[in-house]
Image (cartoon, rainbow, N blue to C red; front, side, top):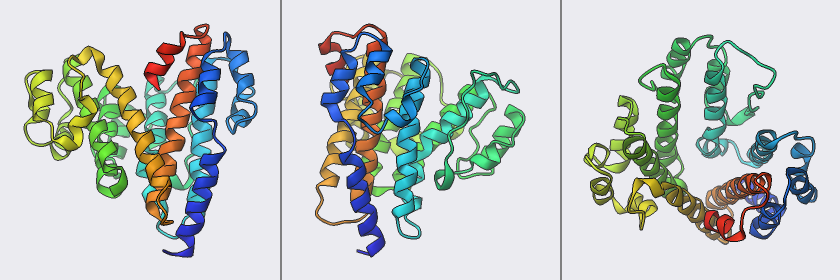
Amino acid sequence: MSAGWTAGAVRAKALVGRHPGVGSAREVAACRTLDDALQCLTATPYARHARTAAGLPEAQRAVTATLLWHLRVLAGWLPQGGVRLLVPLAAGFEIANVASRLAAPGDRRADTPQPYRLGALETAWRSLAQAGTPAELRVALAASPWGDPGGDTPWAMVTGMRMAAARRTAVAVTPARRWALGRAALLTARERYVYQRSLPEPARRDAVRLLGARAPSAASYREFRALLPSTAGWVLAGIEEPGALWKAEAHWWRTVQVDGAAMLRDGRYGPRVVVGAVAVLSVDAWRVRAALESAVRGGRPREVFDALV
């Protein structure tokens, strides 16, 4: 293993070691106000971005901004070409930038968040940011690694990008392939059986590629579950009805945590350790965001938060 990968893996483990984990997230979740919750974060890496947050959306965005900053730091320690491993794993930030832009086309209101600064982790953001209309944005997506989303409505573009992110991760990041397939299954199940919508055609093709030819066209949720390959169906184990998909979402995050922690324990300093670190850092950010929402609600009963994490 090259010295660059060794340095990157050491840095990855150091970043993970500074994050609060489940115990601290439970303390945040038990707070009765957002101010109290933010006070709990003062000794964590999230404090730098979150200390001035004025409300829940801003506080949650500060948490994800911290995650992105640490991924960018990690990318700077990787050897030449190593950043390509992180770009698909950071795709959610670019999707968030596009979704924010679509929420207020042509209207840069004061409360519209600034785009995430992606640096070397962008896929095509500089090109997408130049698009002035949804139609232009679709053209820019089609000319990029994201591919044509199949429509220029906000739903079509965001759904297409989310499925494309799963496809790109499955292809380019072997250690994360299982997570990508589970994510594709969740996205398909939610669109088909909760919202009763057919996937945009490009997203359907990606779903077929990831989940097999028959599952994405299943007439019912029960049939969909039965047709999924085991590499993707694990995420819906025990979820009998589409209305309980929030439990599958929590299961997906717990699985990413367990798998990522196992990769971090790998004795070989290489790509698997880096992917494991990204997984654990991402789960930590998701957990803290959920804890902040709990605090804003006056502190959910502990068992409710535990059901999420």
